[in-house]
Length: 111
Image 1 (cartoon, one colour):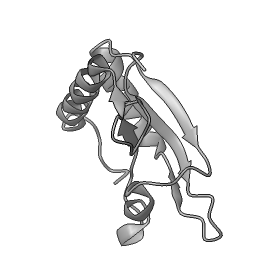
Image 2 (cartoon, rainbow, N blue to C red; image 1 turned 30 degrees about the vertical axis):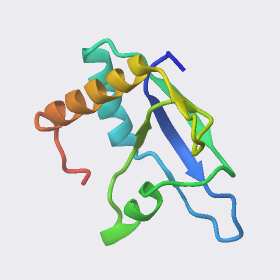
Image 3 (cartoon, rainbow, N blue to C red; image 1 turned 135 degrees about the horizontal axis):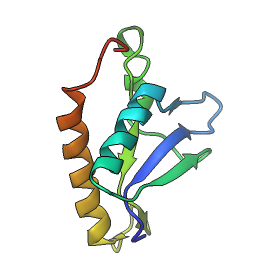
């Protein structure tokens, strides 16, 4: 915690029927560009056998939708006393806002 938004490059449920996703390379490039332009720190994560997110269903919908998962690092997830660093929360919002602003200037033919 305290080192910026968490960018999940791969995520898998680890169950018998594996649900998960891999970050789309173009989405990763655009997200990194947004972070660099705002000088925002990022943390990269790989989650195997720890659950999945909605990105697991989205990235295979309609023949494939480019996805990437961005989150706020936390401790004690899903408990009454889950903890975050407020600087990470602010940096995550700033990153996503910058990412959306810059996407309009990029070639989206990969979609």
